[in-house]
Amino acid sequence: MKKKQSSDHTRRKFLETSGVALAGGALSTTMLSPGAVHASGSSVLRVGLVGCGGRGTGAAAQALTADPQVELVAMGDTFADRVEQSYGQLKKTAIADRVKVDRDHRFSGFNAYQAVIDQCDVVLLATPPHFRPEHLKACVDAEKHVFVEKPVAVDGSGVRSVMETCKKASEKGLNIVSGLCWRYHYGMRETFQQILDGAVGEIMALQCTYNTSELWYHDRQPEWSDMEWQVRNWLYFTWLSGDHIVEQHIHSLDKMVWAMGGTPPNKCVSLGGRQVRTSDKYGQIFDHFNTVYEYDGGVKCFSSTRQQDGCAMDVSDHVLGTQGTCDVFRHSVKDHTGKTTWRYRGPNCNMYQVEHDELFAAIRAGKVINNGDYMCKSTLMAIMARMAAYSGQEVTWDQALNSPENLTPEKYEWGPMKVAPIAIPGLTQLA
Image (cartoon, rainbow, N blue to C red):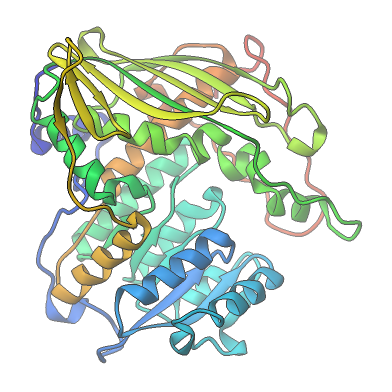
């Protein structure tokens, strides 16, 4: 590939393959009309939280820290106990005086998101990923600015929905800031600018690894229905999380999208399975994936992700070029003799906080950040690898983007809900 590609070029390329063009950078800005900043007509920005787990609670605290004229006015979650836990935690923080969520504005149930949206100017979306396309669409239809956690979908149909929603947000002058937090890390920004400016030469190969330990699990309680058990343990059900390659490894894959200037891979093959998480309590997700993506010119990305206790852990990313290599997490570039030719020496930051700082600064300034392009590409890059691993087949970008697969259940209600069968490569068919 070329040493550097313009963002306009990569957007045009995605337009040709997807039918939607979005702002590709972390800080794409356009001017808003004065009335579009927020609906309340005052200097206070009203924030609503949808999804009151640990990530959502953290996002709410960061939003309130980002701007002194921000108030949390509504909260919603599928479960009332999660709302109350989150509310209690926020009331113990330094910004407790701006947590103004009375009991009538703490909502629960599958439709809680709509009640929250109706109360605020800015919405924080932090539910399980399955719900993201519907919730994001509702926010943009209601002309709200949004912070949206990663990933943004669990299947191709969901990605297509989010792409269309982000296009509408751009037309309406609404901010959409993604929870792909490394895009907001100062050191990462400088590192990837070096890559895009040709510091390693032409890219020949990429490697990304997210090998870590197992995550949390909530023991099933006698009073829980099948649906409640699955939603409370959403990590382990593909329809809710997309599998861990989508839910967690997306951070690594997003950096590969970044390094390649937004150009998606043409195809991939993937190996995966369940070696240690074999109990029924782990739903149907895999515990490891190893994927090879291929780009134009034969450039390959080697991707590994594993969630297994007692194993070597490695979270790292590398970009290999004709003139040198970049150790992404060390923010450094070396030539082929091993000599360091560049290293980031700037300030550190809390990237989770920077996301919200820049979101609220943009709203105040009448500017727009739209992260839709890369958050859709990174999500789809993860989904196509899952499709390849589950089926044992090669999957192309176009197959993943246009896949009819839709993991939405027949209905959202507390009651019986079958667990989908575990995929068997070579037998499980592509949708």
